[in-house]
Amino acid sequence: MSRYKTISLGVGLAVMAALVPLTPSLSAQQFLPIQTHALNGGVYWVEGGVGSNSGVVIGKDGVIVIDAKQTPESGKAVMAEVAKLTPKPVTHVILTHSNLDHVDGLPGFPKGLTIIAQENCKQQMEHPRNNPQNIDLSGYIPTKTVAKKESMTIDGVRFVLLHWAPAHTSGDLIVYLPDQKIAFTGDITVMRLPYPLIHLEDEGSSAGWVESMKGIVALNADTYIPGHGGSQTTAELQQRMTNTAARREKIKELVAEHKSLEEIKKELGEPLAPPAGAGPGFPAFTEVVYKELSKSRS
Image 1: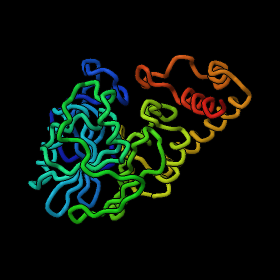
Image 2: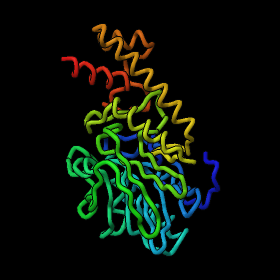
Image 3: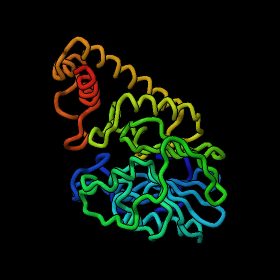
Image 4: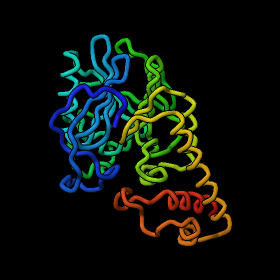
């Protein structure tokens, strides 16, 4: 899947069959092994296990992990991969957003870490709705939050943490390493569906998604690592943004003509049922835009 060297291959758990399951059960998910891929400058990304991709950044004396996967067991699997790379301890975890497949693996990490997230992500993690697996996250709530943009050096490594607007959720955070030109983008850039998955229940926004993608593309990173799937290029993300913005404008035109959601879907040639992969209860992109624009019109 990756054009980068595979460092290690362990006995993994499960990759998400959808972006975020709504039930605690993992039995229906497809299983793939944990794999760690080298990027550059002491940066790696870990796929497989249950939940999202994770990033690993090796600093002078410690390790910074980006996203913690979905189960404590997969969190421990990430820790085991880190131990294969370096004897240095994990000291920080940076979260790209609050979805359970990115945060519920935190109990597999040691307590006492510095956990960094966008301020809305912290609020969402504290909401019972966002913990359907009943994972005990006490001791793993973010200890430092970011509002919009913050540059920091952690253990000798430069990071730029960025939030432009609500997109996939209202608490998205892009993790950019300017020296390595690598960006970890969470689920904003995931391409499993024709158009982005927006979580309205977490105050995501299609307009904010377009704004955020403009910021992400402007980074012009050499490598983008999404929350799910393989590495991406600026050109791929530019095309995704262009297609999505055009689709949103078309839906906007139809809403202005007072078309119903069903009429809009028919005109766009979309099935009335949600697309496979969106997960039960998650509205498709057209429905998200329709709800946003209909609400603003009323």
